[in-house]
Image (cartoon, rainbow, N blue to C red):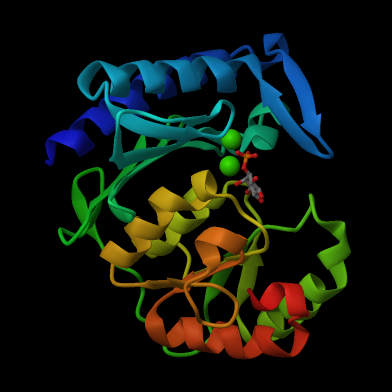
Length: 267
Ligand code: IPD
Ligand code: CA
Ligand code: CA
């Protein structure tokens, strides 16, 4: 394993064990609203601290961007860690056992290492640039569907952007009619890890943040899939409008989404 991936796995497991322990007594978790329908808990903050401490111990000069504490520039801006301490906080606070730690490393602006760790199931998804993707150290591949018929597509609802409801439901309707079924499980990081491992066949969501998608994007790519914005371009890390799947299936998804794209979703 690449040494930097090894450290990221150590950080994800350390944070994961605190998250899993707190989940046993989730009523004691302190929840705070940080925006409309957007929550942070003392455990998000604790997990974030553990991850940053672990990374900083080995790589004190690297830069970090993390959901709850924002930008932490380092002396070395060529190396940037992108962290989501708990992806799926709403599930976590509701006692729904589906959330993950997500850690990615960009080197000179390119995704290089990725870890997504589900501390409840113990599923560890890892990827290194050019070296493939694994779940629990076993190679994973995106399912090579050519059409939507028979596929399961993961998605997230635009609950922080309700002005996109009509456009989103238009895309949803088209995709739902052609696919077998749709899942909204509540963790974009796991949605992408599940695309990479073939548990689901594709994924789309509006307005995600870099920490939601960075690790998942590398996993999907290293598992033989594609990740784009809603017009098949590469602006998704800016816009957060993201589609993932096998190259053929992604084309089908874009075709179904196209009639419902408003100008702001074409980015
Ligand atoms: C959220 C989850 C969710 C997605 C949201 C994300 P958080 O992340 O990934 O599935 O629909 O848009 O913000 O807030 O739990 O880290
Ligand atoms: Ca997130
Ligand atoms: Ca989070």
